[in-house]
Image (tube, rainbow, N blue to C red; front, side, top):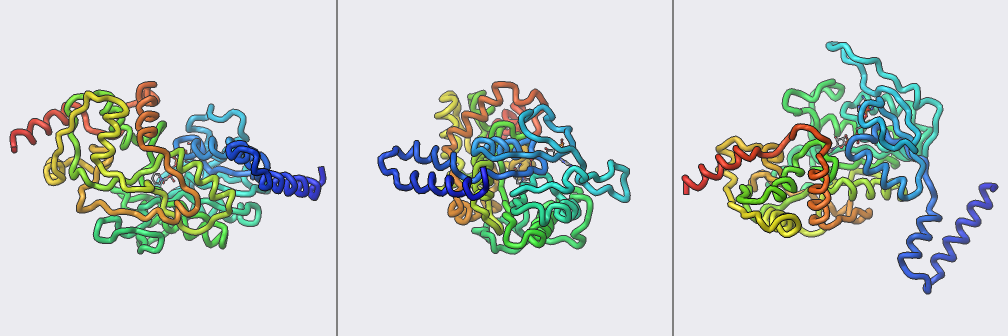
Length: 379
Ligand SMILES: NC(=O)c1ccc[n+]([C@@H]2O[C@H](COP(=O)([O-])OP(=O)(O)OC[C@H]3O[C@@H](n4cnc5c(N)ncnc54)[C@H](OP(=O)(O)O)[C@@H]3O)[C@@H](O)[C@H]2O)c1
């Protein structure tokens, strides 16, 4: 079929859909999806956590995908999708490592690229040199850590809030305590935006959660609800929680590509505020009525060295808990599933074995019992 015929039949079909008031809304949406322009999308990454969510959402919309990675993480995923192998990290002068290899990207064209795997300025610069001119749109997966501060006195953090910086934008380490992570993501964003003027979406997620999360920071709670009994409930009941289900994030990233959205976008929940108390009671109601909550203060947790979103999931002391604006994300189509669904599906993943590995975060049962006893003795 010649391109003009394709375009004519597409426009004809679109007009017919719009002018069909008697066709039910769901059927109209399905028809519209059938005639939406299909895109060729390259994912730099694609096989750990966020990548697969983007791949699944893009395949569901009928887009054609290519994944570029080293072939190490979950190599059996998506056998139906084209895979290219390479290595994007620049070798470090002070440490032997594999040579960078981007040859598989050369001489190829895509409508859009999604970059989930870059942490260093140089690696974005190197792929952009190859892809600029051959790709129409670049989505860079950045982080809320790009902001100078997320603490409460600076809230709400919106896309114009001041950004983190570090002395050397080409530094090849995150620092001992990941102190360069945010600034480096910022320089990666700037590199992508300069290479794709007006065509780079800079997506800044907060905590990404849901089934297959390799960090366990959120997964602790669905597992804890399943266990039941007396649960240490962290901090202030009214503390405002913000996280995002990986599947909602994946679907919205595909929409950003379809709509050619550019510029920075905070990617956090929710439509309405969700407090810690609402979260815990939703978990109890969804998974296990045999949970009882003993609320323990921020000060007690901090005195006992409990780390925020590490030893204790979904907890930041109220005085440090900033709120980030998601107005732009919502205006560009980000939708949130009910948190009960995220809790239920993550619990199902826990019950299916959670990838059979050691827990990376979350409070151990003995430590929780110890802290609860100490809290009761103090009262
Ligand atoms: N998790 C959170 O809460 C959170 C919050 C904010 C922002 N983020 C950002 O979200 C992104 C999360 O990504 P994800 O890990 O879930 O993405 P992903 O696309 O699912 O997985 C990472 C991919 O990168 C590939 N990769 C890793 N090193 C590579 C290299 N040197 N060269 C080529 N490919 C390489 C891996 O495959 P191989 O190993 O086979 O190469 C894998 O396919 C990150 O950019 C992170 O900064 C995460």
